[in-house]
Amino acid sequence: MINRSREVQCPKCAGSNFWRGDPQPDQALHCRYCRAFIMTYDDYIHGVIRREAERLIAEFADGVPSSGLAFLDRRPNSKVQLPRY
Image (tube, rainbow, N blue to C red; front, side, top):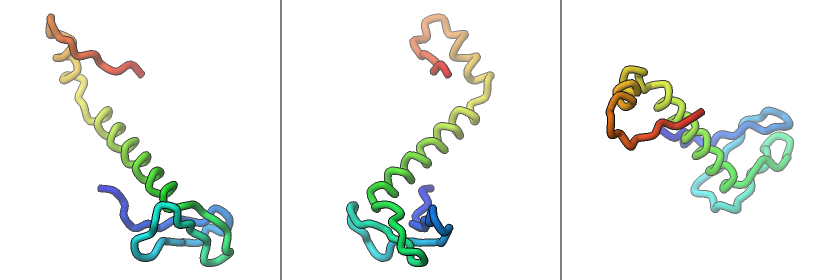
């Protein structure tokens, strides 16, 4: 599940920050402790989606047993190509 807490740590002072309500994509988040610019909400959403996609891909790749992949390799007319890493 996607983390919907919207909590972001300030890169300068490590303070905990978050957006209130329903922010617009171009709304900037500034640290409530040191007032430094952190990121826009659009950048935050893209980062969350990217991390969630990476997690799901890693979970899928690690969760497939090698015997299941071996079955795909044994099928004589299989058009399934395994990804190469």
